[in-house]
Amino acid sequence: MTPVRRLLVLLAALAVLGGAAAGYAAWAARRDPVPAQAGQTAQAGQGGALRPGQLMFRTSAGRVAGVPLADTSAAPTGSGLACDRFSTGGGTSICLVARPGPVATTHAVILDRSMRETRRIKLAGIPNRARMSQSGRMASWTVFVTGDSYSEGGFSTWTGILDTRTGYAVTNIEDIPLTLNGRRYHAADVNYWGVTFAADDNRFYATVATKGKTYLVEGDYGRWQARTLRENAECPSLSPDGTRLVFKKRVSADPDRMWRLHLLDLATMRETPLAEPASVDDQVVWLDERTVAYARGGDVWSVPADGSGAPAPLVRGASSPVAVR
Image (cartoon, rainbow, N blue to C red):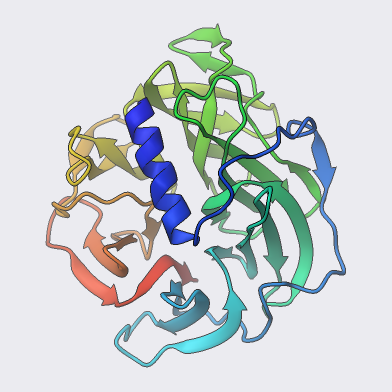
């Protein structure tokens, strides 16, 4: 990200969350694995249950609710859960809860199929992205933080991964060995965000930024390594069959027209712009093999993933959409 873009994104995040503190202390243990903690009461609240065939989302009031995928115009069913970011998969959910204060923090709350808290991890920063794998085993989050000396724009991103089966969590993956353009890469300004998992719960894709450029990376969780695949691809979302990605591509310096959603065929690396002409600053989700959903202008929209058709509104006053399969 450029310094100007970094500042714009930070200001937007602060506005959404009601104004967190401007400074953060540097967390010395940010790279160390930490155990997830169980047995705590969710500050976010509890209630409801996951049911297949639902579209779950965060309402404008900050509560998680759902509507039938077959009829998104139906009255939403509330869960009583309050989240700043939400994702679900395989009967497990992640709820990011902002905790403003002198040093603003985020709680990553893991929930079971009945939307009851099972684990909680305390993180630095402001919630940005959350994603569960299809099986519900792997969870990921991204938060905005400040205090890194390399951060030209005053903040950076920390992205973590939790294996819910083992309870093993890495709160910041920036030290994963990275190969960029075929060579082992080292730099102090490496930032990751927007993880998406493959069906095997091992391979993942994400964005990495360094030296003013962004790259799509493919990661191997078991081997703990990552490599760049191409430049200018952010917030990837892997299709259910694992053959395609939808990502946001920077196409303009104008903040109102900065992004365009694109499809990437992983076999050919051919990209196709989607039919959504508006600038979408979100990590899309796949509703099925043909359609993606995303937040835009305070509502949830959908568009075909192959470049055909036209965008259509799904739910008004909503964000963080995700389909319960």
